Length: 184
Image 1: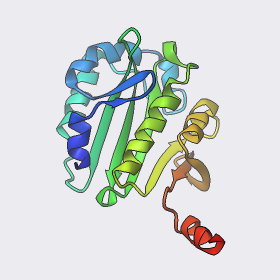
Image 2: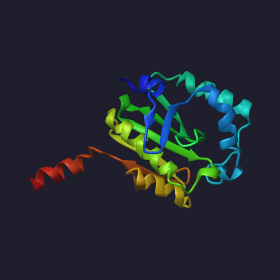
Image 3: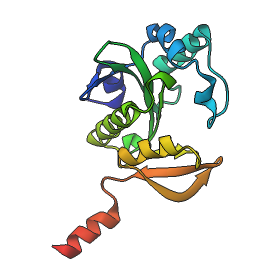
Image 4: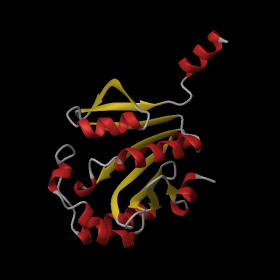
């Protein structure tokens, strides 16, 4: 099943969470989840209003205008209580081999391992579907986001882009395969 279809049809279940494919109808509840300006401390900008978020979700759900790029977006729903708590997303390129991921958890739900659980599930899904490099960009002072990246299996690199550190996960890195061959 291609990532476009997975993104539209697959709910990812974890121990406590359901990652539901993003729908425009999520905008109302998500506007409240994402309303804290503190969520923008490291990424800039300001919280979107419900109409702005609805317009953004309409664009995301429609998909990338570039056929070589797949936008995958899920809302994070707490199974206990049924409330939305955040989002996870991936921009997939290179024929499905490279995925750039991001996550956000509303302030009310931070510190509970929700972002870690959701990001780990996202990375697992992407690698199961053929991603060979998963990338995240994390501000060097954003310790919580670095902890999420680490828990999802990503490791910091020496590369920086726009003041953020590039983190990577390569499940089939050539150096790991070579090392395994040498040891056998």
